[in-house]
Length: 500
Image (tube, rainbow, N blue to C red; front, side, top):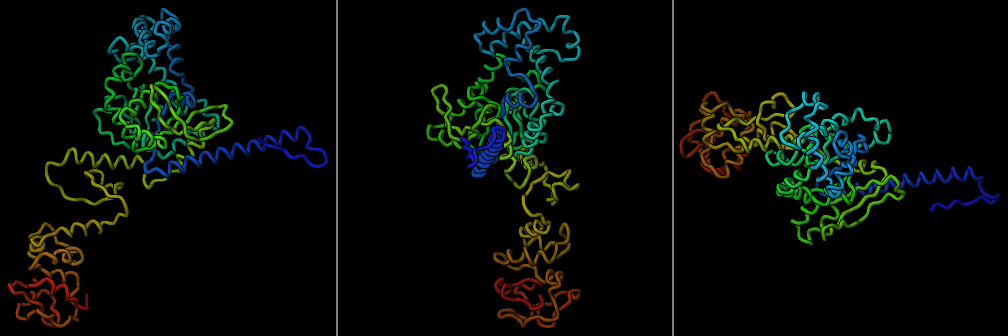
């Protein structure tokens, strides 16, 4: 409660008092909203992985003015032989069963003269329930253009959509049929229905999962009782996929109510795989944002979702404005965009899954360069310097590689400086009789000033070829008689010419 103090001369006039109260109320609201966003940002920053969004029909109603599920079914009763109330009563208010009853009658309507034009531009239905799915998909697709949404004339809603597009999330899961999320997260790869998830190379980052299908693929819609039964029968893989996401990421539910059957069904499948002690770990990871336009006290706190004798701890946010939630998501930082990480992950997946039949050369290129366009890529993250990668390759050279290089029979000349810096220090710890002089010469390390002969070296060995400039002092020799090799690697390790 806001208490207004009255001045000594008798108080504020009524109009001024109301204006002051209104101004203070707005300041209080702004403070509460800011505190909510800051608290959520801290919660998400404390977790190691970026969140996933789990999006329900409330988001489509909010930004596209699309109908809810029951409103959608009522709409398509037009032209059917019975009113919606009949189907609802016959199905016992079970909406998938309502859709099954409607689909049977709509199949007859689809083949009537009233739908001649629609049939001409549509694919052939695959079954008796296909016509209703095709009609629903066509209707929702025609109303799902975010750029044309009249609701975005509202500055607050337009700002919410902009902030949501800037959110740092690893992926999106939705039971919605429309393509709103593919418009907001245009760089994310969509996977439609269970089949695409089952037989795909999903990487778990920068992806949108339409688990109940979408309007681009009408047959994929999970709409009728039969669809839901097939969905449940094949739910094992999806439950395993979702369990991985729920365990590794915070999951933020948007556009669902706490009584939504989809939320209950999915959480029931998840919790069935967890022990009671592990379920407790979900409290900080399951965040349900419940939109309440009449909410005067926007808050975030612990809550419990109870269904089917299961109790799932969650964090509940009750808000009349999504902006603090989306601002918190947009404030999360990571070094690389999710779409780039997915691209890199996909490159490695394909390289491992389909290895080249023949060995290929290692190429070093920036991922955005033209040189990288045709490469099968193994990638690294960090400062890019080709010389760093080159030096790593030189560390793997063998004595045979050096001999071939000295004799001129190698694939290409080696860089003398890299041999001295990266190859020899490693090789001399384990290998004897290693070519040295060629690389000292090539790197310009044989100057006019050379130290006296180290202890243990002799001067009887031949000197390097005339083409190599000789130092003024005696050269190290080998007991084997081959020039440019050392008989004892510890002697070379102790010999440090001053001209290097």
